[in-house]
Length: 298
Ligand code: C2E
Ligand code: MG
Ligand code: MG
Ligand code: MG
Image (cartoon, rainbow, N blue to C red):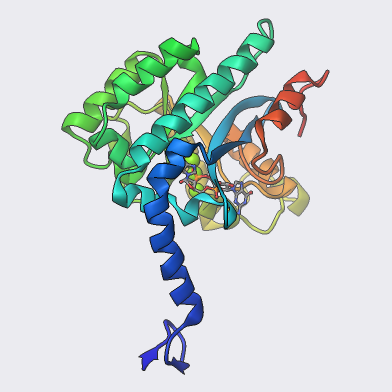
């Protein structure tokens, strides 16, 4: 007999958890061959200028088109891929596919402004592979200008960075690739510490945005200048100001309401990403957006 996690119910076995464990094992052994068979697809989610409503960038998000289980979200397989090392070939595929796509968008719009593509990089890609060489090769082969590529790393990946990862990030930034800290604020790094790392942007974790007073902007609340705001907003505002003084741009994740977007704009965030603007979509949707006569407005 085992006590079910967090519950008062005693069960012989938890069928749901058991099924989950079985699929975890099945997925893990299937990962590497799936990379070779090309079972992964990328969706792209817009990063929209809070001030100008323009499409500044798109984040590439990987999905596994599994022959039996259907379209699997990354939380079902990324940690497995990190554990067994298949994140290295998978990460290479993501990088190449995203850069080739961004280059195609650029070639289709030689005059216009095209969005940069933002690619998630797992910590293991910094330690177990030559990220600088991989990125260099992909940029060369696709022809994508380095300025149109952003790499997203979590705080823990760069925390206490020394040696190999730090050297890699420095070289990449020197080549003109943007480096962003993903899910910023959930870890233990401080902005003072980050200022010593080769970083160009912060992606403020969705938990900060979610904590904003439910979907209201200061104007909607009728606040005057100088009126006190909830603690979370004050902290976010201070982080944004400090980030700007350090020369970093700030993107807010998980923007779901117009009120949140308005407040983030007041606070000075540069770009927003979230369901308010768009869910992650197949590349054709971004192509259509770029082909539409007027840019998307908020
Ligand atoms: P992330 O990099 O922080 O990506 C943002 C996640 O938030 C995405 O989940 C996105 O769909 C979701 N999201 C966006 N807007 C909203 C919103 O308004 N509300 C809510 N509730 N959620 C929103 P997704 O696509 O399931 O990806 C989850 C995580 O998987 C990513 O978090 C990233 O850490 C990881 N991941 C995705 N693709 C890759 C990849 O190619 N390589 C690596 N190493 N990790 C990846
Ligand atoms: Mg990300
Ligand atoms: Mg994120
Ligand atoms: Mg996140």
